Amino acid sequence: MIQPDTIPSSLNWSQINGREYQLRGEGRFLATLKIDDDLDASMTGEGETHKWTFKRMGLFRFSVSVLAECAGVNCATLVESSAGEYRVLFPSGQSLRWKRTLNQSREEWGFFDSAGTALIVFAPKVIDSECRASVQVSPAGRALSNLDLLVLLGWYIFVSKYRDAAFKSAMITAMAWGTT
Image (cartoon, rainbow, N blue to C red; front, side, top):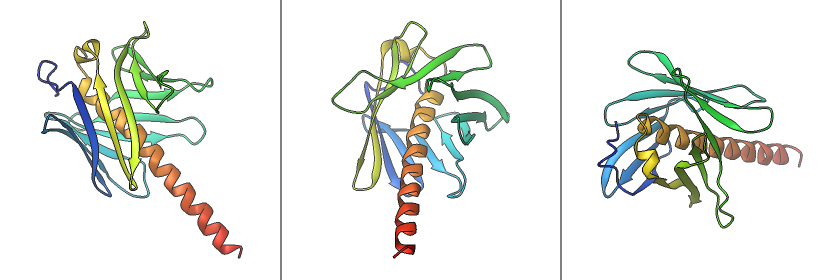
């Protein structure tokens, strides 16, 4: 688990190879996210003391199930509503919102509590075909007992969307080649 009192003020996700991403802060390794299968949307995330499996479900409404690897139980579910909003639901009844921030100068998404307080904010970017992101954790976010899970879940969402976009682009290119 990422310890709230030792978490660096700035974190960065970077791509290590085509199937693995690392979270680092102040030179320290904090977590990893690995693609399990190129044809499947599942990935494994591992923090300092916990390991989870992230699995995307649904074709028309995006949802993600998070399973604790040691217990095999669902410990969080991200669901998209019909209005296009996202909620992370926990077995305890707690929920958080996942939404785009109001930053107009760059793409940012984050987890927000019911009062609208930003807890964890991700600023993704693609550089030379590699996914990266800076992550900011607010003081309120540092107090979350599931901070490590949320930092992995947020990054899983970006990697999944990036891979989907790359797959769609490849399919469109292949179809265009097939018609010439």
